Amino acid sequence: MDFQIKVLLLSFFITVILALIIIPILKKLKIGQNERDDGPESHMKKQGTPTMGGVIIMLATVISAIGGVIYYYKDEINVAQNILPLLFITFGFGLIGFIDDFKKLVLKNTEGLKPMYKMIGLLIISVIFVLYLIKFVDVGTETYIPFLKIYIDMPIWIYIPFAIFVILATTNAINLTDGIDGLAASISAIIITFLTVVSIMFDVKEITIFGTILIGACIGFLLFNMHTAKIFMGDTGSLLLGGVIAALSLYLKIPFLLIIVAIIPILETLSVMIQVAYFKKTGKRILKMAPLHHHFELSNWKESKIVSIFSMITLIACIIGLFAI
Image 1 (cartoon, rainbow, N blue to C red):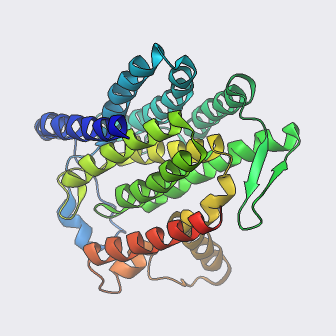
Image 2 (image 1 turned 90 degrees about the horizontal axis):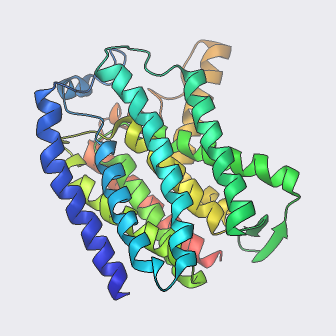
């Protein structure tokens, strides 16, 4: 536990230091947010706020995780080795998000990375990660069923596409959740804390350490991302956090628990799907705007209120998730 606290503080302070260095650089380079014309009117004042801040989370996580690998390498080499696939998906998803952000913000390509190329990149990384888990980490294809408190052993030909779907769906859900100051980072920090607590219960040291690192990075980033945000995470951060949340849940064999603990990202995703489907069918909108957080914004909720309530719902969902184990 003493080492975990040290790792959390290390990750937190590295994130803060990186933020203090990177934010002025992004401002100087004028790498700022481009707000949508069809978005909430209140967001127009955010135009030009530095974005691509997920780089801060990515660098802090990678640096801290490498420290964890070095720490465990001598006495518990298996723990050190098992941190590596988590580093791989963190860096891989973060890199794809970075390329997308870079094309949009630096190269001024409004489309960014083409959706097909983005999906292919995420798919390749997901496949490699899942196959590595099965073959080298020996996670197997067992999956925990909440509340029933049993494991089911999926056939490998079902498990592999299922695991890939979990990663891609979670990543997309967190990406949609990233729309107002502090929301995605707050929700992700709470979910990752839940997964870290589960890893302590299951005595999975590599997840405990990696989860602790991510918690520290998210908290450090939130110092600069809460309303009024000094920096946004961009796709670099949202893709990274979504991929890692899915990866940790698969590693712990509890992806079905995401249905409970990631209720807010799920509702955000469903709100978009329902809005689009209903509009295509009727020409009318169910919500004032999708994703869901924008609906509440246009209902005169302050951003801080939305973040507080959505975070509270996530916290309650995570407590329910603990009872489901």
